[in-house]
View 1 (cartoon, rainbow over the protein chains, first blue to last red):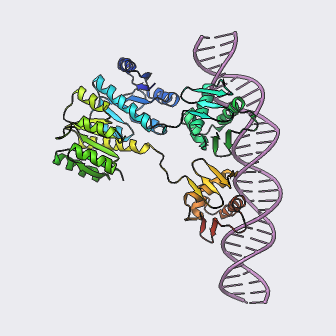
View 2 (cartoon, protein in one colour; view 1 turned 180 degrees about the horizontal axis):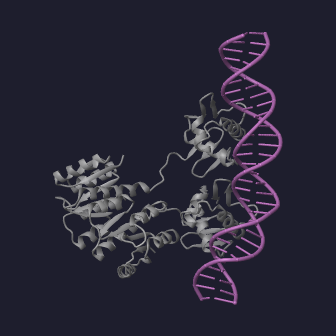
View 3 (cartoon, chains in turn yellow, brown, blue, cyan; view 1 turned 120 degrees about the vertical axis):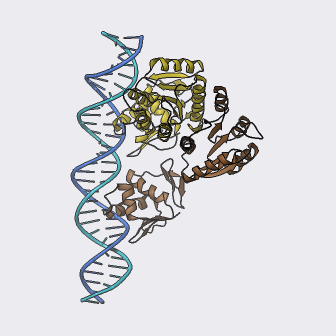
Amino acid sequence: MTRVLVVDDEAALARALAVNLRARGFDVDIAPTGRAALDLVSRTRPDVVVLDLGLPDLDGIEVLHGIRGWSNVPVVVLSARSTGAEKVAALDAGADDYVTKPFEMNELLARVRAAARRGQVAGPASGPDVVSTEAFEVDLAAGIVTRGGVQVRLTPTEYHLLEVLARNAGRLVSQQQLLTDVWGPGYEKEQHYLRVYMAQLRRKLEPDPARPRHLITEPGLGYRLDP
Amino acid sequence: MTRVLVVDDEAALARALAVNLRARGFDVDIAPTGRAALDLVSRTRPDVVVLDLGLPDLDGIEVLHGIRGWSNVPVVVLSARSTGAEKVAALDAGADDYVTKPFEMNELLARVRAAARRGQVAGPASGPDVVSTEAFEVDLAAGIVTRGGVQVRLTPTEYHLLEVLARNAGRLVSQQQLLTDVWGPGYEKEQHYLRVYMAQLRRKLEPDPARPRHLITEPGLGYRLDP
DNA sequence: CCCGCGCCGTCAAGGATCCGTAAGGACCGC
DNA sequence: GCGGTCCTTACGGATCCTTGACGGCGCGGG
């Protein structure tokens, strides 16, 4: 399901948006502040962000920059200011669309649909949805990992890490990319996380965790999932 | 260079758009009719399309459908109609953005920039990802080096050095560039490192390390990877 | 002819870095 | 409170980077 993050400090407007989006089949989260927005974007990875520029804590453009620093998620900007300079600044800061308040709900919904459509096209480049090795299988679509036919219980973080590796099966994934993809921006230096969770994945998935055959580490570079 | 196709039957407006876009560094084509637009999109593959809905021959929505039948090129729609229904129809037909006339030129330019930026994000689209010689192969995407079909274990520094040489295969790479690319700025004088690691690469990759055939040294200048 | 000099290749060793593993405390939902 | 998950820390061991020393080669000058 397509997930939308609505960033707006006016609770009434945010709730109205959420109701309409949910009626159209979207899964909606709400963030009332800029910091909450950055946090939720990195943690929940929405497919579209609807961002009101008039936030209490951070400037909307700063939030946009924060997101664009590491993500290409489509962002639809809402604003009460309709001057050309404001629009140009937001669009050049990385916004995908700019809607001035007041707006018609139907139009905004259509723009969110357009943004969501784009995100899916540009997204994962249509890889296979099941990555299987000699020892275990990862079903990306269902979110299920099996080993010898029986399902393996993975914690959310473990699965997220395995998912990133599986979507780049056969290719080396750098430590920085793994850290930002799984833990979000700002965690590029916490490389011990990788060691801990790679060890847990190997313990649950590798026949001989001490001698991994599929979850390969490239010292100093990153990790790779070898089919 | 980013190429834009402007579809508009009002010659004055089309020319004004073209002038402004070219001043921003875009390469611009103009199509005065819907049929010409469909033809040019298929033949010239623009990076962005600016589509006026008020065309003499075809309905703008039909043109949009025709394009979307086989292309995901970003489309910015222009229209004199500003009703919600019109906007929703165009956006749901596949438009990426909807601008009502009259519009500010700066805003439209910003929206075109935003659309162009999205199109570029779509693919990694970097050069050839595999460099192969008679003796060994380097898979830049996977981060794997093989020799006679079997994988060769390289240390991080060894791989980084080989990677720089592989991305400039056939060309001479100066010692300074190798040092700054692999060890970072400030190491331009440590040419000793290059000798040590080139020797290790040759020992691992060359059939006869004493007489290298692919990892060539240009005395006083730098090194080159000969396919 | 012989020597010194610059440049390159080779080897070895110590210290620094990185990885895997285990264990304990913090936090959250029920 | 409790089970589960996450974060953090510490430590042994393996690996790697750095550094130094030595020899070969080409070349020009003494």
